[in-house]
Amino acid sequence: MSSPAGLAALERRVAADLDTLGLPAAAWPAAVHRAGEPVLDVAVVGAGMNGIAVAGSLLQAGVRNIRLLDASAPGREGPWTTTARMETLRSPKTLPGPSFGLPSLTFRAWYTAGHGDRAWAELGKIANQDWQDYLGWLQRVLALPVEHGARVSAVRPDGGLLRLTVDDRPVPARRVVLATGRAGAGGRQIPDEVDPGLWPELAAHTADPIDPAALAGRRVAVLGGGASAWDAAATVLEHGAARADLYIRRPVLPQVNKFRAITGPGFVHGWADLPPAQQWQLAVYLTDRPAPVPHETVHRALRRPNLHVHLGTPVHAATRSGDRVRLDLGGTDPRVVECDFLVLGTGYRVDLDRVPELADLAPHVRRWADRRSDLPVASWRPTLAAYPVLGPGFELRPAGSDAPPEVGRVHLLNAGSLVSHGPIGSDIPGVDVAGARAARAIVRSLFREDLPVLRDRLSAFDVHELAGTPFDADLP
Image 1: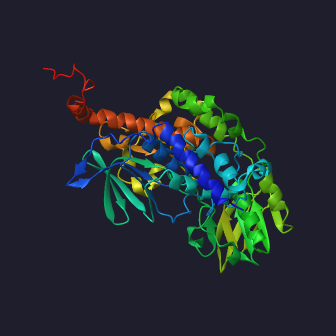
Image 2 (image 1 turned 180 degrees about the vertical axis):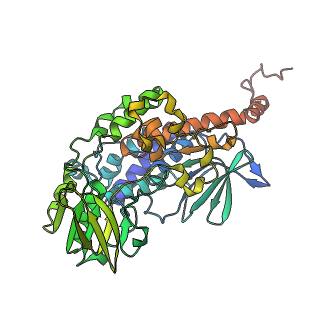
Image 3 (image 1 turned 90 degrees about the horizontal axis):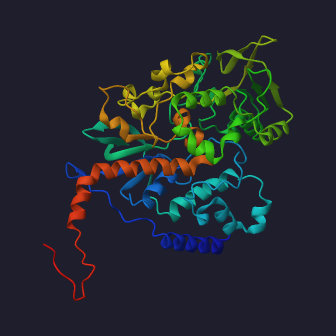
């Protein structure tokens, strides 16, 4: 049971820590208006883990004229209690998360305050709901300006600013951070072999809302061999599905999670400063060696006797057959089967042309395909070539001289940052570094932009240090 008294004590400790460090800093950027209306310094799209990380870092640095915009309801930001169907996080419980270097803001401090030291010692991995509750606590204790139910449909250049369309209203901003998660850089990966006409009655992607109770007593097919596919199969079986069939192209599942080997400070801090060819080669190496399904997930699914795993079985076509789904299977045992519902655990694509809110800017964004002549021919990967080239603060880079200058005012703090920055823009181990890095770049750019105003403030500063002494005087 949670301890309100323990959390209240922790919150007093957080307040004392921030006060001791003089945080957050006083607001300093120049006030900007457009047509008489105030302009945000930064609009952060997404109030989940990455949005909290960058917004908290901005506030600590005195950039207070910000807003976090999230389409979801409170407590539903990110995937943790919506489309992430695993029972616990994959990451170790000891990772600090978006704690801004303060022990009192870590998950461990929050969990221990609410549940006690013994519960922490006995905790294996973090439950999804606990992680969601922790992130919600961070929003509250840091007083982040979150606007829920705010859907951003467009980010357009607007005379040196960016103009967001939030629902039906314009919101001008000097910088925009897209903290939009794994699907935020191009959306769901839907194989060409799957008929789009199956949606929504007969098919869903694991990134879609799925009511597992509605599939009770039905036969469900799941495409894919990754964690989300296994989680989906386990979830529908736990809610009474008659059968779940996992169809996996590979004859053998991946065995080693290479991403676990790059969570140390070297990769986290150093990747972004490598020459482009080395960044590319690292990204190729990792994507050629996909992460295996966590063993906890496999054991969870295998507890259900009506799970059937089909390795080496690609799906050549998925089409409608009356009120069912017809699957044409390949592999060593080609055949046709039918199911009542199809779930695609086929991951996400990175393609900024498929990001609706970037429709006006995407054609002008530089991609890794533009660097092809500088990259090893043997390592060419079209999927990685679609990734954007990002600057040191996750900012988009213009593709040519005719690109709107506002392109560089958008920071992509999501899965699309992999090649330029490593996986820190979408995974828990690097979230604190990613948020601070983006915030630091924004602070520097705002300072350069506001230098004339700041210089005038400097000139106008006239606090006499020697006031009250015989040596106080007005200088010529």
